[in-house]
Length: 157
Image (cartoon, rainbow, N blue to C red; front, top):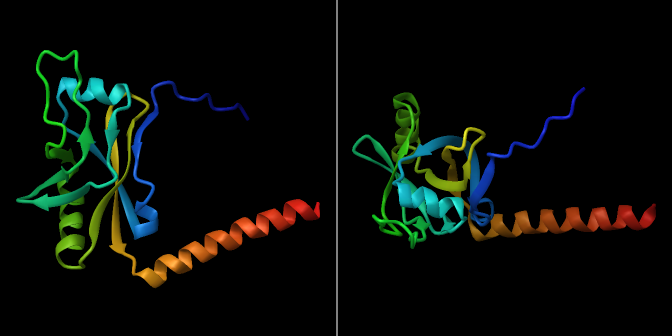
């Protein structure tokens, strides 16, 4: 089989690494983001953070709240770094997200922001349930045991 070439347009902009530690992610969904020109330019040079952000369904629309996109200094018209940004999903997906947040008590956590193969800015949202401290300790213990197991197997061979 032919090796698939690495896509030059695909690029991870920002990643929320703590999300999988703090939350049990049950489902994920790719969303588009409405951005201004200066925001896209800032993302292209990789100046953003989604670590403290979350998504919320309000009045039939999905919003990314508290994400940070650094101001682009060469822009004629700047942007607000911590502005609420509208996320683009289908009506069917929106209904499912509303149901999971309102009825089932789930949280919408941004996992990763990236440029897809067409160069469009996308964000992957995780439908998650918050972990308790004992769940976090169990996850940490499992990860440590995996590392230790790999080390033992490596030494054995």
